Every structure is written in C-alpha cells, then in structure tokens.
Length: 523
Image (cartoon, rainbow, N blue to C red; front, top):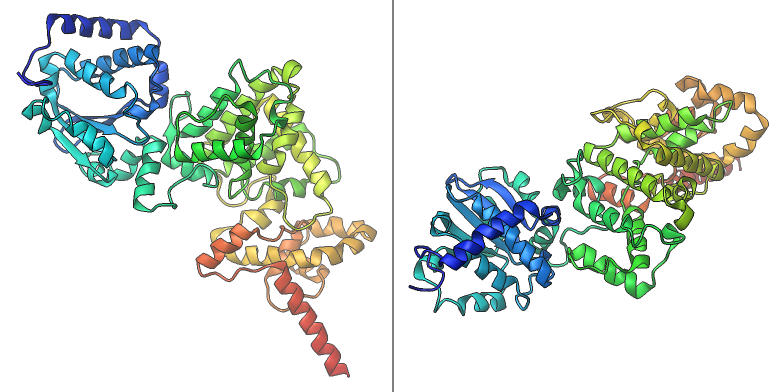
C-alpha cells in the first residue's frame, strides 16, 4: 500500500507506541502545550465535524519537547476515534527545517485505522510556495486517498465560513501569530500589533482562559507575567528600573508584534523595557482617560484623602472599564504583589512599583498643571495600596455608566452622559485656557474656591473669567480642575470622525481677537 494510506492498519509496533503515548500523556505535565495553544478546538463545522487547529510554530524542536508534543498530539487525536474530525495546520512562522514535519508523519503513522478514517479533511493554512513544494514532494509516496483530503487555504475567512460558531467568535480561537499573519497578507504593514493597540481590542482579539478565573486576559500579558515572575528573573536587583539598549528593545518589540514565540525572553532588560512599553504605548491610560481627573478632584477637599478614599477611587475607576480591562488590571496588580514579595532581593516594594507605573496607569495632562506633583503623589499612594491589597480593589460586574458616587467632580470632566459628552469635552478643553488666569486669584480667595466646588452652573459661570460666547463651558469650573488639552491621538480621532477638535489654543486666540477688536472700537 501507499505511504500514509488511511485504510492501512498501523503495524503492531506502531500501535504499541500509540497506546504507550496515550498512557504517558495522562501522567505527564503537558499543560505548557495547552497554555500556548499547540492544539485548539474550534468547535464543529457545518457538517457537524470536530475542527482542531494545530500551530507548529510553538515547537522549538528540542528532542524532549518533540517527544512530549507527540504524546500530547496522540492523546488529543485519541479522543476523535469515534467521531469525524477536521485538522487545520497553521503554517505561520513554521520552520519545516526543524523536526516538526517528521513529528506530524510519526503521529499519523502511529494512529489506528479507525482514527485515520475519521479524519475527513486537512486544511493547510497560510502556505507559501516553498512549504507547498515540501508537501507536494511527498505526493509520490502519499496515498491518493490521503492526498485528496488536503486543501490549501490562503485566507482565514475561507475556514471561518465553514464553522458553526460566528466568525468573530471563531477568530478569537486562533492564536495571535495566525491573526497577525492573516492581516499582514491582506494588508501589508497594517496588521494588528501588540504595542499601540487599545487594551479592549487585545482582550477581544486574543483572550485566554489559562489563568483561572480570568476569561478575557490578553495572552501576551500572561506571557510577560510568566517570564517576569519566573525564578530566574523575579529576584533581579532594581527589576522594573532596568533599561535595554536600542537594538535589543527594537528586536524584542518587533518579535512580540509579529507573534514570534521565540522572542528573546531571556534578555531581562529587554523583557522589562518591553513590559513597561506595553502600558506606555496604550492610546488611553491603563485606568482610563478620567483617572488623572478623578485624583485631581480629591485635592480640592478640606483634608487629605485617607486610604479608604484612595482605594475607593481606584475601584470606581476600574468599574468604568470594560470587563477585559478590569481583568487585565486585576491580573497585573496580583503580579505586582508577587514581585513585591521579593523586594528584599529586587528592591521592588509596592511604593517603588507604583512610582514606576503611575504615569502610564493615570497619565497626566499634556498641558502643565500646577497641581501635578500633589496629584501624582496621591496616585502613587493609591496604586501602592492597591498592590498591597489587590483583593480590596474589586470592581462591579458591569462597567459603571453615568456619574459615579465619589467621582462627581471628575465625572463632569471625564465621564459625561452620552448626550452631553461632546459639549462637555469642548467646554473642559476650552476652560484649560483660563486655568492659568484663575490660578493667581484662586490663591488669594480660598473661600470662593470652596464655594465654587458646590456651586450651581450659573454661579460657576459668574465666577469664571469672561470667555467668548461660545460654550456651555460653565459646567467645567465646577471641579476647579480643568481637564488637560486633548492629546494628539484624541484630536486625530475627532478629525477622522469629522468632528471639530477643540483646544485651549483656539479659545485663547479667540479671546485675543475679541480684546483687539474692542480696543479698536474705543480708539
């Protein structure tokens, strides 16, 4: 018979090897393959056949790993003995010069004929000419029945359309390396990336449930935390203060963005720099856009906020995030607590960790703020408390909508109701131009400042300096902590949506124009 004939029964030696591998798989710790997703179930297709995705690029090629991978693969296929199934081989970043191809052949030859007959189709996803030539070189010895099962697929959409689950849900089952390869083929240079992509998008595209009880953690966050908390890394002195050289960090970030499973994780400075860059490159702060404004509002109280208020502020900010963002923040906090437990070696106390990550968790405004040192110190203290007791930072099950108790002042600037959102954004941005003018008078009239916090809109409007008759901006001075000018990313988003981006500079220019015209009239 021909090689790899599905009707041919395996030799007694092969069958014995098969049964031994299945038994070994039950005794060995093969969780590492589940963690990376070497073999994933995609549910059933429209023909009611089980669909399994195999991604070979996760295999390094070492002899010990390949042996365990074979046990793992045969155990997975053993469960398909009495039901029809389909295999998808994802070839993204797969190097056929390793022993991955021989592992595939060995697994198939070891299978009993009952499982071979249950295999209905083999999809080869993201093939290249070179990889196709390697596979077709075997066609002379492969049986015709097996060759007829092979289907070469160029686009992921061709496979998604065959599945029972919705395409958007099925897409999340594919590892990041496959999704990146797909988008790079469709739109070179514009594929999904890890750095610079909103956290909510990563939670939706590459979620993993390998860390109970989390269900929406971005897989890349788990990779980073696993390596940073490993025995070889966690005790490194001044851990989060390490800095990699340019060449190392560029190479590391490039590998992470491409989904290369063999990025240089052992380069500790590059690992730590890349981890910090995860948060620095987020389009919005890790705790949301209203984080800085929320803590800035606390500085207007008669007394300094205590620990309960600070932790409550973090909790309320967290409740406003999406479920995936909440899980990511909780997971990172617990990782920080684990790392701080080794502070005698690495020097990373909760306070030190908070000092490193506070700027990216609660990003300060781009416009100079006289209260920034006080607000930053308060943020550092709050994050430090959250690291010490992450269990006390428990968000609600659903994101908070509308004004939240305790954050009323900050909410006016950062979390308005949908109908007023555009107007309040415009008002808070334009009011930043008058913040410098008010600073000198606010120091000499503390009583008026205290009253303005609780004043109604007409009272706030009367206390504010004269502005162009433009705006419902009277509501923003309620907090006496005007929101910083929108960053470039926000202006770009407004422009792309056809909105007119408002900034402090525009209101300043209009004020100058009005004053100039009034002087001319007097003359």
